Image (cartoon, rainbow, N blue to C red; front, side, top):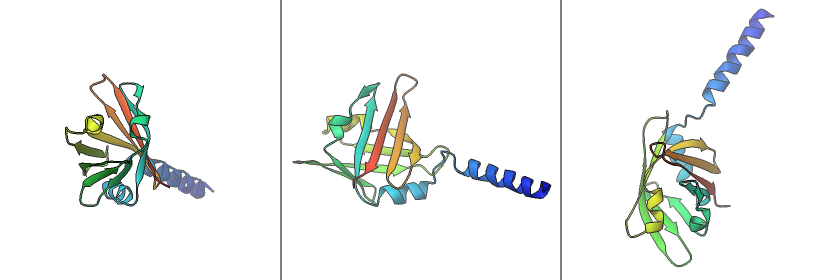
Length: 138
């Protein structure tokens, strides 16, 4: 009985540790490059800016390009990711000719990842807490 109890405790501890918020870089890359994404939430400087991005569809290409398609325009950028998983950092870079996308132009911590959603968080020197949630376009 004691061995079974110890086995259950150790197995549970292993599952809890492995289910933390650490995201494998290659898994993240595989997920985001499959399909299209929409912004489900965009908050900058404690202001909700979701509507600025809600009519655009994001494609994170395997070649590290970002293509954002709107009703009448296409916006281009680039992305990359760090190699560490504690935390995984996701970088987005857009041209200065797209002012609405400058707030996205930074390094972001990946705080949540599933096949249908990922969350990015930025703490800008404790001045603001910014968050973006991408949801797979269905």
